[in-house]
Image 1: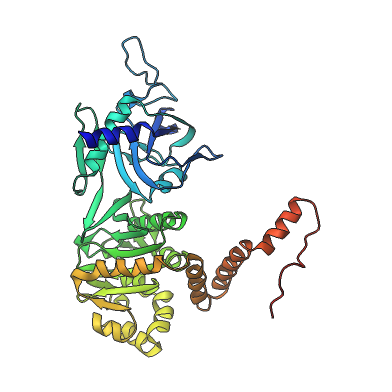
Image 2 (image 1 turned 135 degrees about the vertical axis):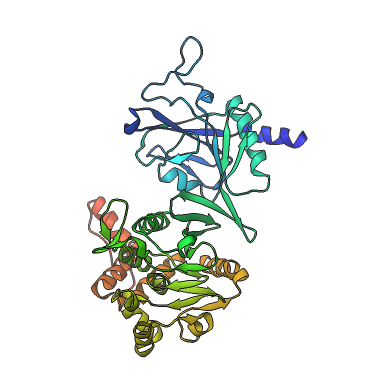
Length: 444
């Protein structure tokens, strides 16, 4: 009881940041998104979103009838009108640690019983208000629930039986991976600065479809735009396959056919994205890395393999080939003769053989794969992010030709913009004066 009182006293001091959303596909119904902030260092930015220095706390989506200023009729029922709230709101919560800015900066809205992302919602307005008693009660309940051992897709109901809380935390090897966004064919999770993108089609050895690749591209875009993410793990679910390439059951005339019936080879876009994203991408390979799946691990910056990993190309066996990164970059990694052997014979190679030819960086037991990969990622996170960015584009520049030079030049421009010399030029222009570059050194 004493601990509960202390929590209540702490929460009373907090504020609630509330953002209202309008959804044009729902005839203007508003979506209410509320954040409980557990840090006093709060700033409201010029765009109306919230800035917070200490990125720890609880993200709460509040039930409609807890809103103090909802329109109500004479019976006290909420009036469901455009610009206000839909009828059946429930509480849906996620614990966030170093994830808060992902939620607030990107202006995302979530809705109704499962807290699903609403991409068509548009931001309308925001405000800050004191914590009210009803919110405090539910926040305390949520705090207590989050302190219990987490299980995937855990659902809990508060004392009043009115609200449902959904906490999506996946626990692997004593590491808690928090879901960043729900997809149909991949898992996208986060742990202490590390994002993990995992193909979730183990029933077909994690073969990809156009939808799989589209979802992976979307997740990679989020990784690129999210400051809290410093390194990315690419893997497959089930422990028996990293990825077995394109799903031959949906291969049609001109590419792989998705639900829109359009044939695509969009995995080529994903390959380029893995190489161009200015953050290290680490392939965590268990089981088969075959065909297009083999190419995916090849284009990653680093590859860590389990002892059960198997590598190889199958294209000439099934009427396919990858003449881009799958051939040219593979030859840079293992040498021209070995690359031609891999493609011409379509043999498979075990993890130790892959290590000997420089195809992977390290081989570990399967039960140590994620632990080792995360340990490598944490070492990377300790390094200078700008140095890593420049190194990655430098490694890529030669093979990527003019596009690689352009990317390296762009990063060099970014580095220059951070210098006092560049700032002098900008400031002089804004202040309508002649710039003074004489004070900056001219290195030999």
